[in-house]
Image 1 (cartoon, rainbow, N blue to C red):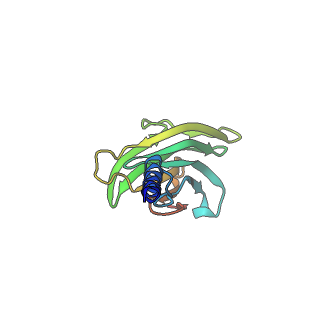
Image 2 (image 1 turned 60 degrees about the vertical axis):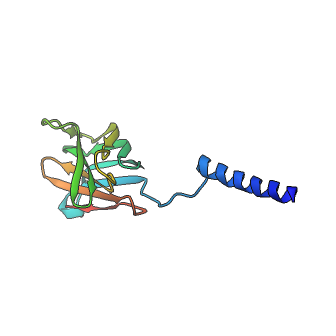
Image 3 (image 1 turned 45 degrees about the vertical axis):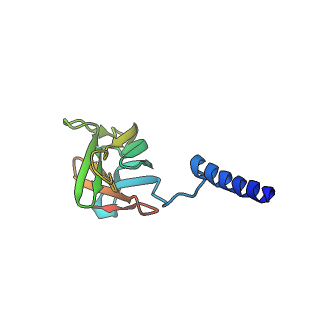
Length: 160
């Protein structure tokens, strides 16, 4: 009798430890990276600009991690990141920041390190559920996108 009670208590303590320490599988597989490419001729031509990075999903907010931006030779552009919930825009961030500054590729093309970009959805119940990242060729207004949903396993990308 005593052994049975000790065994039941041991199982209960073990289950509690698993729950507290977080050794349970993730509820969903949200996308962990994105690529947004702006390509001339509606995707059939030369690469103009490109944004790449990781995604860290939190309960209400999202951080784009280790973001880099490439501008091809003779091209200038910027990155726009938007946090959405349904049809409501929650937060938007531009890199470089608004004000007429752009990343330009010079004569040979150039990579730029942006770093982490935080999208804050803490003020909204349920927070950000979708991220839209745009790489924009400023001179030709060619736009590439990556749409990333918390409930999907990968982002979708294309041209606008």
